[in-house]
Length: 308
View 1 (cartoon, rainbow, N blue to C red):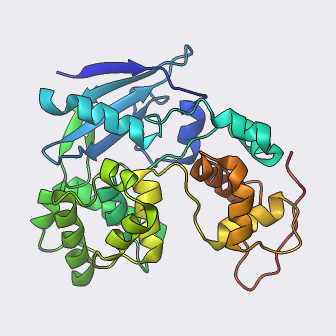
View 2: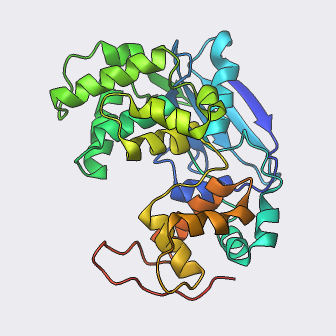
């Protein structure tokens, strides 16, 4: 039987705005305003569908389908983590009080929080599948793997397919559109998930350098992918990435003459603690929207008016 939970977000949160930017969730015909997630539940015994809604009262409700009593609470908590709702964000607005640039981004984007992959396991699979192909191609392969090899769960008359659990992934000998080497790498990811290496709480608790070193040791996972697994899969809240898009965003938003080095980004980000990654997400959302997109490596950097 489906079970329904509810919680009040600690800090600002707007589900209808959030779903416009992140998730890639399938359309839920019975309630277009809802967010329907299908995913393997961490622990890997079952997959679930969780349908989340936010009535005008601000309370988040979630109905869990497809799992037994032992996993229903875990599925609900995982859905909250995917939306960063497991984090107390009541102090997030105070960051804007310290930094007018962040204040402008927070207000424009409804205090948006990061939306994560369903789990570090799915994040790792995504980065391996997506190597050297387009986002559209990778999304198509993941969707086909879910349809062909994942569990199908019906919620309010709508059938949704979850990405294969690690055990199901290990059983696959071929995947259409996926080279043998990538499938071998995915098998390694699946085994790491079963061994607990990709446990969300564990990765969050590790020192960042240790977590990244462990992730990079996985076959096919480089520096870029390891950061994606840790920050977009596990959901580390107070960390800074060293990447060109973030540097371009800082340059444009703060009116700098040239892109800053990582040390300068870290210095500016001191005011963003303890939500530095949340602020980085806002910078990236701005860059790909109002900021006009990242400059190519050879293109001259454009200046942008200071946001306040």
